[in-house]
Length: 569
Image (cartoon, rainbow, N blue to C red):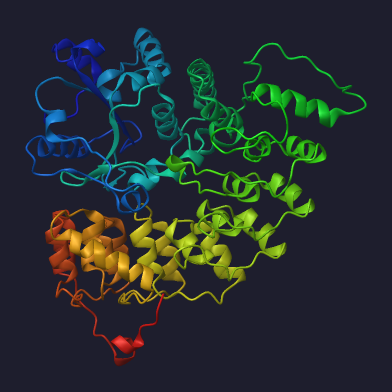
């Protein structure tokens, strides 16, 4: 297929299949439309999808593990060429699979198909985010994974995948014909669909109904499986992560047999706590489940400030913490409830905990404090609250990362701007490098740092022993078992931000750095220029051509960096 054809044309040509799971695996393709009235006017996305699947099947490319994912989770298994071999992989793509006509019957059928998207996703083994950097025809702006993640419908599809009962398959990001990688970003759980952008506001009630059904089924499934921790976690993140921005009340009443023992008029706080304990399968306020969470830990992420206040009145400790890590969301062992509330943007709860004299600088297993988590989750209000409460900005989480580095490495552009505006003494050294190593999805953070006069030609030299040891080990590993992470470690020494943007596949940032007068003639310690690295990682031809033919500005003596100019990080 060379041109994108609508559902009706494919149906009349006999090219569509009434899919049943018994006939093979399916792939759900989530994407943004490149025009208001057509998903892909010039078939650009289609060509990328075809090239990517063809390259995976022929082993010309493979599905990589992102740098941050490998740092956190190690070498995870990825789909291989064999998983996509043969004719038994079916594709769900909205323009193919939903009626596109404008007559009455087509509109009704299209609406029924849209309302069933959650069901389609649950039946697909693979969830593919198709997000090459392409220009929107009408808006004249470049779309990519960052813009995809801002869309309400895309967030709904992503949440549907996470809440699906199946645990096989994978979520895959396709950025070009040769650049595909696993999508495992713990922070995306905070991206509530209702807080995303909808072209049609009338879609919000439709999304709300779909999410309500989806969460209800998932909660019942978890109860049937006896998975109390994940049941409690989902139950208490409905308002903060699922229904935020939608006119939906959190589900409750799933556990029968509640009997009230306190007088709601004389002791309303105790009654609220009784109901909460029953709904969450707890017997007492001080109980801790097998996952290491107490009732207050779950309440802290619920957004219900009165509930937290009531638990504190019933002698829950404001300095409570979880005792085990939650790996899939990168939540650390010994994380205090203040950090939990901060991370999940429960700012009224943060205020209540502070008024209860919580330790504002309490640390978790990695020495992170609540301020680090506020920076990580781009929670500007919490940053302000915590700083006013005396949070110590000098505290560094392991291995030696301060709050500003945390914000930069998390792509938290709002927090970065807040810190630069009100606390302008932060050192900008290596901040572009941090952003490109740890959060290469967003170009907005690069723009923010460039506006703050970060050095576009700064060259990286790591002196911190922990980082040097880790990068040294990864450089050795690169020779026998290469990956995106080992490649970055192998080439990091004396690399410029432009080089790192190429190595990490952040080609939108490459364009920004070139526009900011990045010097394309500089070489890293391996003798490689940005153009050399672009060819090595098979960057898009447009990027290679842009780097090779870029007019390099003369570098004045004040911008010439020698080894002695570097300081340790």
